Length: 309
Image 1 (cartoon, rainbow, N blue to C red):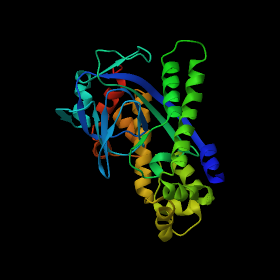
Image 2 (cartoon, helix red, strand yellow):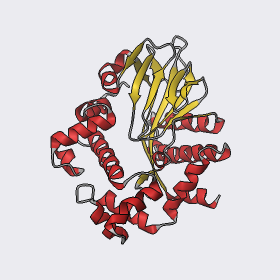
Image 3 (spheres, rainbow, N blue to C red):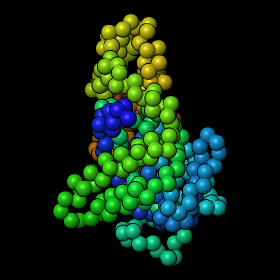
Image 4 (spheres, helix red, strand yellow):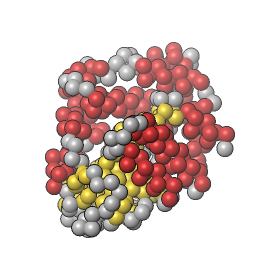
């Protein structure tokens, strides 16, 4: 339990957004993907996703948690006749989903309705905690999680004084409730045990922090070896042994994660954002971005700017 408390205490949690959506027409997204963690509470109706075992149906009152960086086949509603890629969905989403601010009340004319919360949870503000577990999306059946999601959403759409502060607190509470659910149901036991290595080797934390602070700089294995005070030949093996991925893959993920953040929060050009996260060649940055997220950087920005869904 001490290791679990260390994990929770180390987490930097950040609220991204919350929205309530009605499904106008069921639709399947063949390659749903987001950098941040996605939490979907099914208020009414159904939805589904795919994990390594196949299709998983989500019933009314259940929650699906999709770890940041995990690609899945996601269906809003049931018996969807339309399947779109992420890129196609960005251009057509208003045909299938409608955002609303009706509080928690269900519209009797709508079969499928969900609350979607997007959040960040990083170990030492460097590593996406849930992504680091390398787990599939999973279902949560918990009244505590459901209640917290509802309260978070109500505060997110509230205009009362202090709502932003409560949203921050409720987002942190939601992350704790999800981790408690994982522990209580003994999910991902081996992954959590591996994750605890982050707290046992300060050299790894030094590497994480250095990468975070120098995304646009030289992050070769030679440099990382100097940071960790190990040999250049060994640093890749050392990093993968503790994290499960090689350092250059991790660096690219961090660079792309920051690129998405800049697309969401600034009006900087794609060229400028690419350079800011370490890509001198804009065309190469754009190719890698689309390969990772399934949509071009420009359309990712458009997706984030659409307020309806």
